[in-house]
Image (cartoon, rainbow, N blue to C red; front, side, top):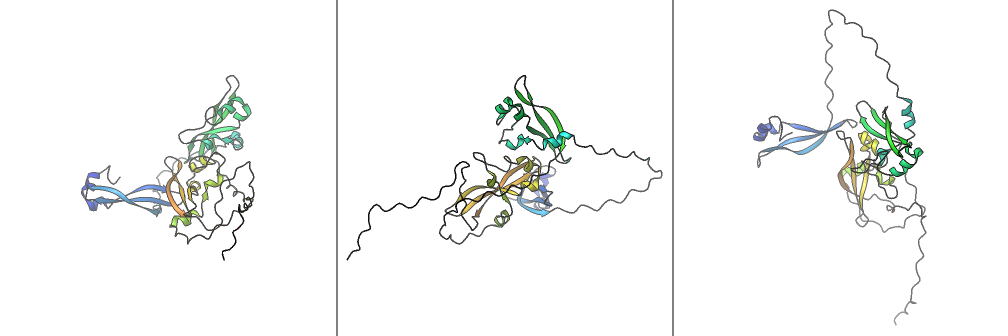
Length: 312
């Protein structure tokens, strides 16, 4: 880095040398961009640190090397490569099963015999064998190691007894939009002039809000919940989502967390919070109970006393 590693004492002592370097802090291959940190010198403590980061397009690859000279003797012909391995039939069957990775919680993985609803899987063989768990992902090879949940009647357990290597599944189609409420919300008084949002607020209009897919008692976040395993594997899919973390109806603003992909840790987490104006239109309705229909508004109560006569 700017302030550590090879020749860092020279960069700390020489401002011109310090500011002739930069460091790549992140690469987004799908977007074709890289995050670059510029080394800047601080005379107050004689340090050379990253004080500013910018996003730039990836540099084009270098021109291909010239072909090697023709050898004097032609090399022996190699046998043709073997045909590519076909995925085992079980990989097609797994597409109808449920991945336990979709139910992981922060700091706690769900497995066949432990975690969420494991007592039900231990008691029911059919339920147990309707699940599998991703044990490893090889992004460069485009494969995943999957463990099939199998039931053992001898000790009433639900464990991984077989693992297979399958190609990574394509991302699922986007979920349908939430249903339209039965009753239109009441009209609010005209709002004050809208705040000028930062440029990122305009970009968020093209992203998908994870709050639209919350279930009763369970919220969906960038790194866990519905389809979280796919977001952790795919940077473009991860960064097409955001999560609303706060809503101020009085100020008509909302706090949004952008999902950012980490290709090193294969994580999809909120790294940046922004405050944006609530878009013009009907107010955001509160979440509906799945078992109770919306009731029409109650009629106004009559006055307790008759109106007084006008004064002479």
